[in-house]
Image (cartoon, rainbow, N blue to C red):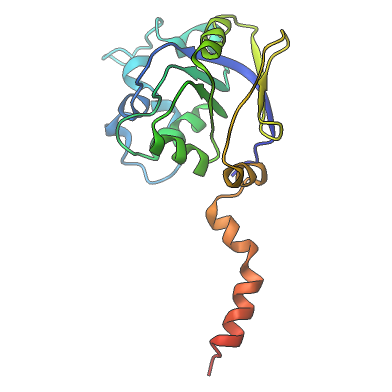
Length: 197
């Protein structure tokens, strides 16, 4: 995974609550076996009309949101089924962080395990960020090291994250990478307790 220390980027806002994983990545696109290539299908039923043409009214299709890397959304983001494809599609599209008042638990944990940073902020703060996200020039900075979200206009808020997950994100490790740190100890144990003939 790519380490997450500090990220500055444009925000895109989707002012909707209870966005479920079937809207994030519809079920017909779950047949791929790689973790990449899902970004083109992100919010597919909202981004495109039934004939495949882009819906200009959908938030991510608006010119001011082009190139956004931080998504701001309503409460209970990522509810529904537990598909890991949801954070994969958000990442593949280009998002590094998602800010919302609350997340579905399984989705929240899937994000952390896949290098996407979910940030819980108060509803009032999310309202401010949704409003600012309508501006094409608005940028936000997310510092995982400081556990802080801030802009150049005086907005600054702390956020909570599990220390274990924070360290993995800072290093760009998943749990398999973490086991490799202990490889010398595992090898020494095996040599001592499991001698080969």
